[in-house]
Image 1 (cartoon, rainbow, N blue to C red):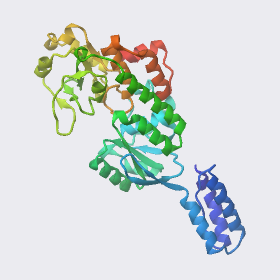
Image 2 (tube, rainbow, N blue to C red):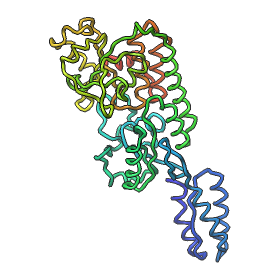
Image 3 (cartoon, rainbow, N blue to C red):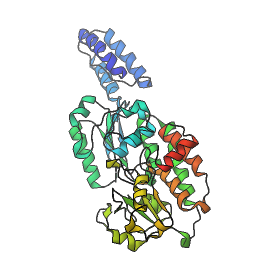
Image 4 (spheres, rainbow, N blue to C red):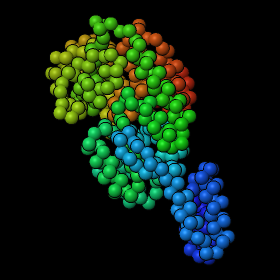
Length: 387
């Protein structure tokens, strides 16, 4: 509980006795708090305080808030001290868990066994408060978070959604950018917002180093691997090249065989015949998180499907399940969980062009972002989807 919440009843009682002086709400440990506290004590000790004193009290109360500009360019007034944050979606929750788990109010769905294998136990029991049209507004309001965080593609609809959510919850909603390349900026923005600049800088630096390492891999154009990335229980839902869902493939210089256009950049359903026609060099499958189907299980199913026996990737045993502990490394959700996927993908597709130790970089990611130290044995289980 904030200092203001602890002292307010005492101050108000004293104020009423002293002639109706208004109370203050300050941030503990702030220099403005010390000054305002001194003013309050002086005002309370003087019966019938002047209107000038009352103005000072209101000024101190206003200092408990600050105006920020979020990543959508919106001016938002937030508390000076942010205790808890409602995650409006799964990407928001991942950003908060990786940077400030003690400020994370909720998850947006019930965690599965794979997620719980990595998520620290003390945070596994955070409530599922839903997302989108399924947000439990009453429960969120009752919990009383300081703000809400919404991460998404910055456009007019997203901005409108943030404004509507703020109206529904009665709290500030802060917007951040879901683009993977913006993750360093997101961490620095959140670090300043939450008063965790040093912790955020570590994560931002790791993300920047990852992007730089990937960008500096000198893969000749004629050596770039043709990749199909499948989702769902039948692995026939794919992420088009250039879409947010396929961003990780584009960034590691893979050639996404799904050169199709969609109006909104969403995933598309294809036929088995289309996959056979594309005949990729490598197939990556994500499985189906909603059905607890891992990438590893989906890969095994595809390899054993006689309908795909003629595929080059099947014949060469180059069908791989994407690691998904605690969250998918390539897509679903589209959060900073994909940063480690860039490391894994580069090692999988271009081992001869590597400029990094993938295993060590993955361990470092888990230490910094997921707060766990992976052993070599655990790392292999994560890769194999058996953790």
